[in-house]
Length: 360
Ligand code: IPM
Ligand code: MG
Image (cartoon, rainbow, N blue to C red; front, side):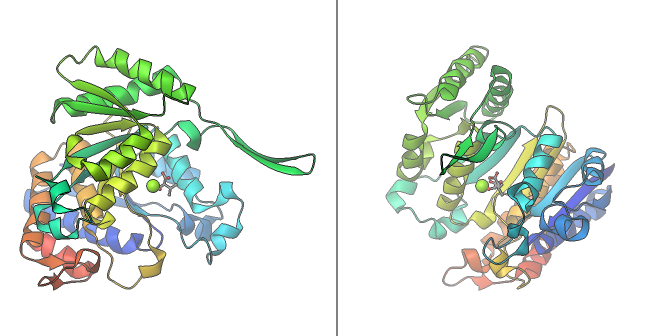
C-alpha cells in the first residue's frame, strides 16, 4: 500500500527522535512491501524561525492532505529561547494548539503501561505495583480551558487574568463515545474524571457521560474526582483501564501516569478526529537540555509510529511487529540513559533505533 505521511520533526530532541521513527517506518516498508511518501511540515519554534509564525496555512494544508501526521516535539527553554520573548499567541505551543484545532483532533489517547522489563524504573513500591498496570487516558483535546476566552486586563490599577472553561454537550459526547468504544476492546471499564463537586462544566460532563454509558451496558462506568484520581494513580494504578477526562485534567494526569511507568520517554500518544486521520506524537516534550546530544529515548516516538500504523493506516500486523521489536530490545537489556539501570547496556538514540529496526 502507498501512503502519504506528514512528518513534523519540530524542536529540541524532535528531529532526532523523528529520524529514528522514520528509520523504523522505512524498515516496515521494506519488510511488508509498502511505500510511504513523506512530506516535512514546520511547527513550533522551527516554524517561527523559518516563517515568523508557529504554524502556517501551508503546514495545515500539507497535514490535511496526508493520511497521518507523525510529530516529534515542539518548544524550547522558556528562560533562554528567543521564542518566549514573543507574545503568547506567537510562541511554539500556540502552533501545537492551533494544529490540533485546525485538524479537529479532539481525542487524545495516551496509553500508560508498565513493561515487565522496566519494573525497576517504576518509582512505586513493589506492593503498590502488584501485577503491574495498563491504562489509557482519553483526553479531550480541543475544548475546555485551552480554547476558552482568555484575557489579561488592568482594573483600577490591579492586574487581572481570566481563562474560561467551556464545554458543550456535543464536545463531551463525542469524546465519551471514543472512551467507551476503546474500553469495549479492553477491560471494559471507564473512569470518568471531573471536578463535579465544584465546576458546572464537570456536572454537565458527568450527566452527558452517563447518557452515553446507557448505550454501553457491558461497560462499567465510575466517576472520580480529579484530586482523588491524582492520588489513586500512585496508590493503586492497577484499578484503571480507560480514564476519560477533559483537556486540562488530562494534561496533568497523563504526565503523572507516564512517570509511574518509569520514564516519560516510553509513552506514545495519538490525537484523532472523527475519521481515521490522526496526529501521533510522544507524550513527552522537546527536552531542550539534551537536544543534539544523541541520548534521547526514541521509543515513545517509535511507539507513536506504531499507533499510526494501527489507527490511521489499518496496518495491524506491522504495528504488532514494531511493538514486539521494542519489547525484544528491552528484553535483551538495551537502555537509553533515562531508563538505564544496573547491569543493562546503555545505548544512544541512533543505536536504539538501529536495534529496533534490526528486529522487525
Ligand atoms: C501536552 C503538552 C501540551 C499541552 C503543551 C506543549 C501545550 O503538555 O501535549 O501534553 O498542554 O497539551
Ligand atoms: Mg502535557
